[in-house]
Structure formats: C-alpha cells, structure tokens
Length: 578
Image 1 (spheres, rainbow, N blue to C red):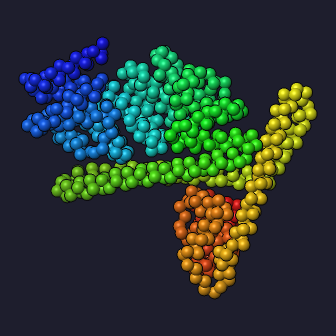
Image 2: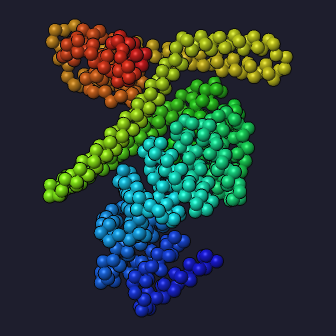
Image 3: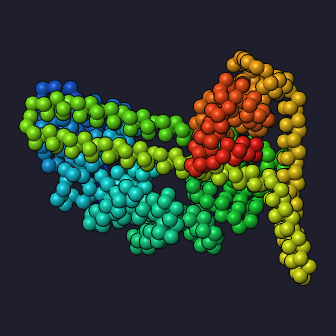
C-alpha cells in the first residue's frame, strides 16, 4: 500500500509540474520532501525539471530546493563530490534559523564531508546537527545523526567516542521503536568492543542483538547478528556454537558473502578439518577483494605446511606477503589521508580563529574572553587527536615487533628443542594408546612437528648459503676494505648496491625495518653496516660521523622501537637476528 501511495503522489506531482499547475514552487517542494524518504529516485526525477525555474524564485525557495536536491541524492546513495552547494545552504539557514531545516542542513553537510573523506569536518557538522536538536522528540533523525558519528569515530579508531555515539544512537532507536535500528546498533556496539579486544562485552551485546532479532522474526537481522556471533565464537574456540550460528546461511549465501566464507574457512581450520577449510580458502580467491585474497593464501599456506607440501606452502606464503605489503601500503595511504584531513581541518580552524581575532579587536572584553576559551578548547581537541594517532602508531608498531619476534623464535634452536620435547611426549602417549585411530592421530601430530623442524633447518641452511654468497660479493669486500681506509668516500650507487644485496640476502631487510619505524637515511645506513658485519669504528668512518655519534644513534634506534632505554649492543643483537 505504501508503494502505491508514493506512486500516486509521484504521478500527481509530475502531472502538476508538466501541466504548469497553479501550485507555488514552495508547496511543490514540500510535497517532494515528503516523498524523499521512501522514493528518493522519484524525488530526484521531480526536482530536476525545476532547476531552471529556481533562478526566478526567492532565496528561501532556492535554498530549500538545494537542500532537497542534496538530501534526495544522499538517500539515493549518490556520492557527493563537492561541498559548494551545502556550504551555501548552511550559511543561509544559520542566518535564517529554522528548527527543522537548520539541523538537516548540518546533517547533510556532515554527509557531504563524509563522502569527501574529511572526517573531522563531517564530525563537526554532525555535532552541530545534534546540538541544534536539543529538546527535540524527532528520535528517528537523532538516531541517524549519532549512528553516523559512531561510524566516523570507528573509522578513525577513536573507539571510546564511537562507543558513546553508538550507545546514544541505540537509546534513540528504542525511543523511536525502530526494530531494525536497535539490532544494527547493538551489533555496532559489539563490533566496537571487539575493536577494544573486549570479547566478553562483545558477546553480551551480540547475544542481546540476536534475541531482539528473533523477536522481530526478520531473517536479514538474524543473519547479520549470527554472522558476528559465529566470527566471535571461532575466535573464542567455541566451534560447536560457531557452526550452530552459521546454520542459518544457505550454501549459496555462504559462497556469495566474503565474510561468511572467511568465517567458515577459519572455523574448519581451527577444527582441523583441512579439506573443508581448504575449500573455503580457495573459494575466497574468487573474490576481487585484497583482504580476502590475503586471508586465503595465509590459510592455504598453513594447510599446505600441515600436509607437508613445502613448495605449495612457500608459494602461498609469497602471495600472502604480496597482499600483506599491498594492504600495508593502503593502510599507510589511509593514515596519510586522515592526517591530511586533520591538517586541513586545523588549517581551516586556524583561519577561522584569525578572522575571529580581527573581529575581537573591535569588540568588548567579554568577546575576547570567549575567543580565548574557544582557542583553549581547540588546542585540547588537537592534542587529543594527535595523542590518539600516536597511540595508534605505537599499537601497530608493537604488533609488527611481536610478529618479527615470533618469526625469529620459530627459526631458533629453542623452537626446535621445544618440538623435539613434544615429539618425545607424543611417543610416550602413543605407547599408552590402544585405539589405532588415536595412535594414528598422535603419529600425525608427531610428523607435523618433525616436518616443522625440518623446515626450520632447511630455512637456516638456505640463509647460510645466502650469507656465504653475500660475504663473497664484490660490494661486501668493497665496504670492508673501505672501513679500514683513513678517509673513505663511497658513491651513492655503492650504498644502493649494498642495500639491494642485503635486502636480497636477508629478505627485504630495509622494508621490514621501515615497517617498525620510519628511520632516517643515516640510521638505515648504520643498520646496513651492522648487518654487513662492520665494526663501530668502521661505521663511523664510512658515515663520516664520530664514534660517539654512532653509539648514540644505536641507543636512539633501540628506544624508538622498544620505547625504553637500551644499550647499543642490544640494538646490534636485534639487527643481527632481524
């Protein structure tokens, strides 16, 4: 019935416009406004023919028309590419406040800047929209504002603020009686807890969302929540619950959805059902998604290694690294965009403050006090934002360092000895087992451990061969000889050659080092020389620095990575194993 209702409204409006009806343009726009929520495409079709005649209308009508055009495009999922129109609309309604249209102007300014990738500016306008609606009972609009704020905070990894926004949105969803919105926001809150590594709280909200989704009896909402639950259950190693949650998805749906296929792959992998896991990991390769491809090759590499197929495992690991590097570059680019957006926002704020300062010179002392207060608040916000970015960088650095240390351990004698000890324990357990099936399982585990040790030995032998070849290279000899000269002068080309040879021998040594911290060119050269086996005195000569400077540089690099004071020798030891 709703569809028929809006169809009739659209038909009548088209007839009115086409026949040059006597209705005023303002009345026509008000009728179009009532149509936008349910049929934005039809609303756009009605607005376009009015564009030329708007030039002869009042400013109020023109601004209302521009607001409706932006609103309809947004509802029709048309990406905004310019802020020129919305800035005019906001400026107008700020001069001529309207309790309904001013909040809408602020909200759609936020939507425009969201599409333009300017998150700080978008959050600024969403906050203005919320503030302009204090005391309002339009819960449907308020919930949308806070939901948009939550998404932007989550995108910027500002999880505490995202949580506040989603909780506020959830409260308005309840007041508005929006069943779908309640389930969606409960899932958003659960997702935010997952980002905060709080699995228990995430589980609580997912379960709450699932109970509510069941009451609505809407399959779409149930599946949304079951997907999140199953992903969490896999991480918690509650595999039976994960499988139960995934039963709602038909096989065709599983194969069409990246997220569900990924969960299925991880579930079977954790359960040790290798054939099923391999099936879903291979299926992930059919998606044109870099994250799905990275995840697929990681899983297939693990399965190949488990099956003793070293060649296949190495190939998948190579592809996994390719996609990981691509994702890292995308992440860095995203961080640069965020920083640029924040910088632009701060630049605009600085320009605004300068304009305010010029006005303040002509105003009374009360206005000066207000300006200084605003300046203080802006400074706190800027410091807070930079602190968040710094914490995010350190979190990524710690994750990268942990990965490196784990990789070093998996190549160490301690790892081999640990596996040998496990083999001995398995031999003892095998003697105690009578059941042939259990004996076979224990034997398979033993073979896997032995295979891991063989792989470690093979990798170490391969590394030794690479190092022997490097030590026999011309560039190695050239740098060692120059380290004993009085005033060695090596061209840039020799440094580039040394870097290429070290990267080849130690598998992207410099790129891996820069993933930990953006070291300077001089710091990179010191690390290259340490890796080449040149002593501190030789490093000082080759870099044209004093010995004390080289000592300080090594201590500084250690602190940049480990965030604590350390001896130069500790950094040398880290580089030797890196």
